[in-house]
Length: 367
Ligand SMILES: Nc1nc2c(ncn2[C@@H]2O[C@H](COP(=O)(O)OP(=O)(O)OP(=O)(O)O)[C@@H](O)[C@H]2O)c(=O)[nH]1
Ligand SMILES: [Mg+2]
Image 1 (spheres, helix red, strand yellow):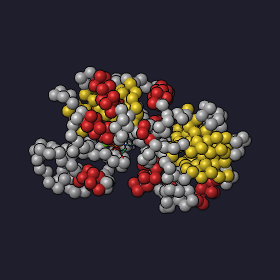
Image 2 (spheres, protein in one colour):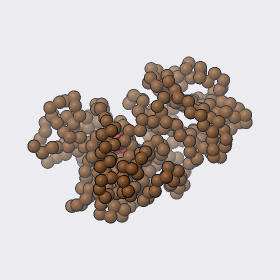
Image 3 (cartoon, helix red, strand yellow):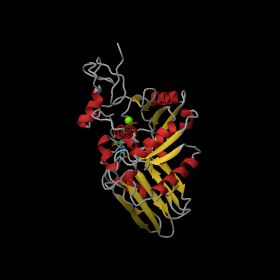
Image 4 (cartoon, helix red, strand yellow):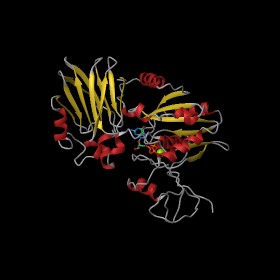
């Protein structure tokens, strides 16, 4: 019998085990796209049935991309560039050209000039030593920059297949739905998208013409992103829906900033200093004395330090400390998957505490 795949996530369909991935009660080829039980509940009830996802499987799939001549389009999250860049991408693609789409630019402050964002991204790429075919800014959700991206992809692919790759949740499937729409396709039957990481489970092939296709691929898991440690019910507190608003603070000497219960910045300075924070507006930023800042955290996490309620995920009890020293006039310290804090002075020592496993990185400020 022909093997059928889910139109929403690419998984191989089966109707024998309701508890396993790819389950569909009845496997009837009606000519219409079929969706597995999991995609059905995400699409209609925004409810996720968890499946075991094996990142190694996804990485193996990525390796197959390097076996043929094609164009690789990688999406990154404009709010978490380093945290959503697939490490070792150049090894997977094996010489194929890489085009970068910087997604979710609708969440950056709208006063920022696109050309400034693009130059900043190019400097980030240079810093990790990657040569790319191009960089474009898009918002897959708001459908900004889609036609331009489609034209550029068509130019760069030179009649070859296209693979859309990236870490989970960067918006690959949302982009492909937007792309299909810009081709004038009816998208009554879209690919499944959701804010749960690991929505797409296998390659999804979309024919571009008689000979070539575009492929959606499962996202690579970046365990350094805070969202991997939170309950899905907490995502709404962390993931912004609207443009981020900068919130400024004047810190007196040696103070601490708490980003809810999720991060703590101890900033060591004799002089007063300006700091700007960029986090979802539901997160309370608390400023306090640095003296006994650890005790303060232990006492107030999940309570005063909101929004994540007690009981907190286990790794909030085992925090990791990063010791950093700012190296630009404006340096941004990112907590992957959460947001960033910009310090407006060079050579300032900062200790950052985050739940164990979460990545922290420092770059020259974009804003
Ligand atoms: N604000 C904003 N949200 C977006 C944008 N694009 C995608 N999203 C949201 O990001 C989440 C993830 O989108 P998906 O398209 O499922 O991401 P994916 O990269 O296919 O994820 P996996 O299949 O898990 O690898 C969804 O909640 C989308 O609504 C965007 O341009 N702006
Ligand atoms: Mg997807």
